[in-house]
Image (cartoon, rainbow, N blue to C red):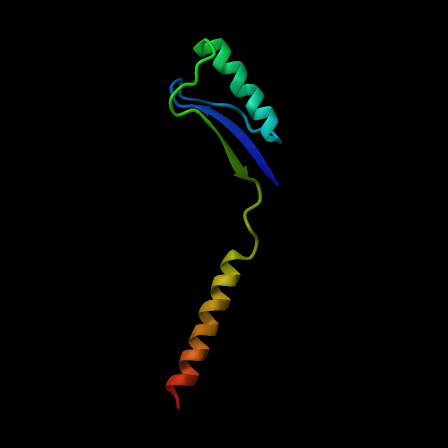
Length: 78
């Protein structure tokens, strides 16, 4: 599940994480109106944060390396 954060690079502020993109867009719109007279500051944006990294990434890599080693060993040994 992802969460979202709005960041204004001009003000150097990152808002707390929210559970959906729409909430982050509302924070962005409110900040633009209040702090930048409705303008779009350079470098502002909404970023998605993965709260749970993809599981098994390291295990998958280890399995692939093991498979390559076994294949190399079988080819090289003949």
